[in-house]
Length: 156
Image (cartoon, rainbow, N blue to C red; front, side, top):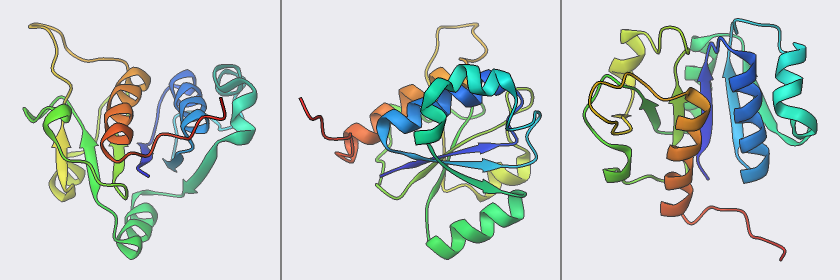
């Protein structure tokens, strides 16, 4: 099942929303620190509501710690960015992929762009700059789960 990685997130509400999504989908979130807010921030709790306790969260003290873990686990790194023309829906996801999202304010540094296994974008209407990071995560994660047949099994 694909994981989500957040590179030094800036906005607690987005992180809380992504953690809630991850809890509902049974996906692990990797928080690559430092974050632009304390993880115990009330806005993070408000956005994540009572789902935060059910979210699988792995904290990495910095990029090097995350990258060391990722290489040891032999996982592909898929960067979501506006700086490419490869649409996410044309990509073949694998269950072990990690979907990486950069900072809301500045994205991912060029050095990270260079080491990613793939860089994907969400096609948008002409003249539009970007989609909210939490919504982008939901869109691309949905496609990755669909392709890898990794949606949680419903009890209904």
